[in-house]
Amino acid sequence: MKTYYKTDEWNIIEEGFSPEEHKKSESIFSIGNGRIGQRANFEEKYSGTSLQGSYVAGVYYPDKTRVGWWKNGYPEYFAKVLNAPNWIGINVNIEGEDLDLAKCKVSNFKRTLNMKEGYLERTFNAELNNGCKVKIHTKRFVSMDNPELAAIKYSVTPINFDGKIIFTPYIDADIKNEDANYDEKFWLEVDRSVGEREGYIVTETKKDV
Image (tube, rainbow, N blue to C red; front, side, top):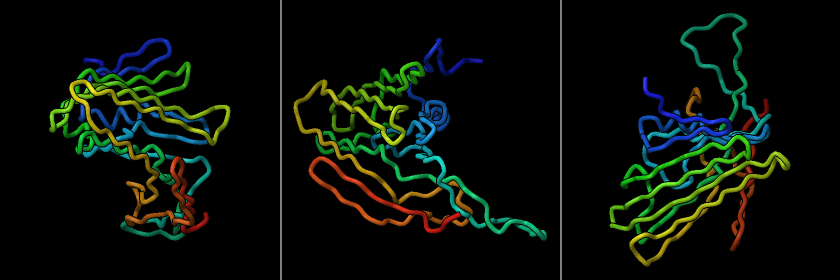
């Protein structure tokens, strides 16, 4: 059986982009620090199959039990680990077209989980439908020193054009768990603000455990 992922002493490596393996790769290349956990979702838009996952330790929700039958003593609710607001989103628009690996030609794709230095790195070339060719380099980490801190470095290098590239970073709190029993969303927005170089959103769960 062919091994899809490469490994060495400190790294897990994926060479070549396979949409069929993508959800598996999102799990394998996850990062975390004991407080924050993040699946290896792409920062940019991705219209292919994906399971968005951002998690905060200690945040649970009393999700109503859903079964086809009932017994005395069966719990009415169970504590569900919630999918927290997505903090990694960066929409990348290149000469009027959004970068989406499900809709462009991808080459030289490489993703590395460096477990010695504690970061996730991704590089690839993309040719968009508008003809623009770019080289992408991303790096992401969550801090062990400060459990509330995470950071992303995202760079785009034009290969065959001079033009406009627009980055739109965002936090998405309009999310839900894929395994929610009644397709329920669990978060309420409390506050939000956007400035020239910063932004935040405050949310709380609809119920307490």
